[in-house]
Length: 76
Image (cartoon, rainbow, N blue to C red; front, side, top):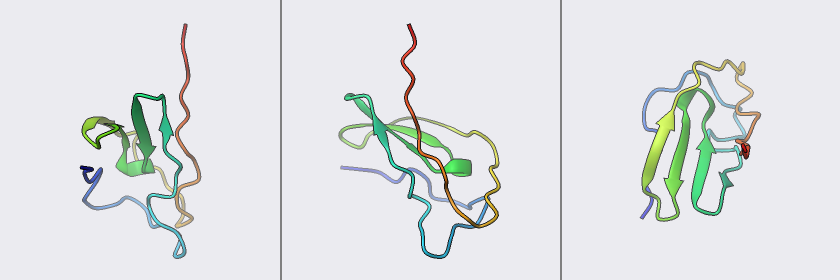
């Protein structure tokens, strides 16, 4: 069963025809990573269990909403 990633005040407005969850999630085949801009970046397992979260700080989008999706980088 899934869980709510974030439930609280938001830093900036979204576009009136969009949601705060418009960014595409990314997976490494083991976990799923999602970004909600100022509200944080979150990792879940495939059962919806939260693994970790991190805030990147306040991101002002002037009411245009999220414009990025997370990307995974493999380091050697």
